[in-house]
Length: 273
Image 1 (cartoon, rainbow, N blue to C red):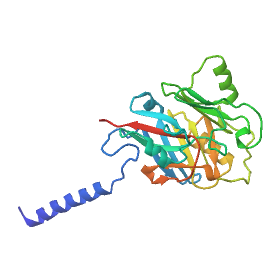
Image 2 (cartoon, rainbow, N blue to C red; image 1 turned 30 degrees about the horizontal axis):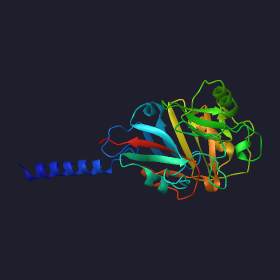
Image 3 (cartoon, rainbow, N blue to C red; image 1 turned 90 degrees about the vertical axis):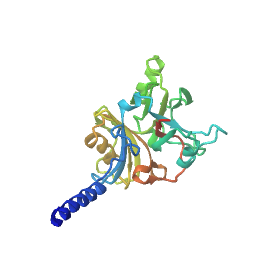
Image 4 (cartoon, one colour; image 1 turned 180 degrees about the vertical axis):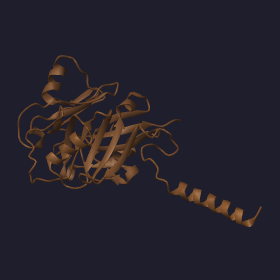
């Protein structure tokens, strides 16, 4: 073989290998796994800087994935407080793909709103009026049944559904205010507000996904709600918390806040044995 042809062939192989090595990989599934559409985490810069983790609703109907709430250690019933403590409680065949603080809490890190964990009511539904973001009505509940069907429902509506026996939440977390209610931004949000903070929350969206958002810069309630409604297409979205309580765990994008918090929500993946 002429040396010029050999050199050309070798250069082509090296170029192909280099391109392959530089190709970006999907952060949505474990290495070596061809299921890259069930969940993913990434960051965005517009309309403001934020981190987003999403899970397809259909994936939650499988045995492989489950959305769960976490609060207390099974050893001593003390609040877990941190993502590190939560990770330490997981069995070896379970992976925490991402997690977030899941609502507001009192001085003892106990939830102040309706909370259900594995069918057990930890805190009753709170439909009282009051001050603070939680009572910026309407507030709402993110909940799902034993089949893994996730919904975000205005608190009074859910209260009636529970009273009538129409629903049986397996997991539930109440917070407030609602960000988007049936395709409408919360009526009390001011587009010209000067109150900006780090904020996070979740939305149930038209594309069949549940989106968990953590702003990476301070934003107004209106800006945050607008993201869910207009950019992500979520007819219903719920504010979890903000400021020093806003926390996310997403190792695939190198995010792991060390803050202390109350109830956490996370996507668990069962590993094949």
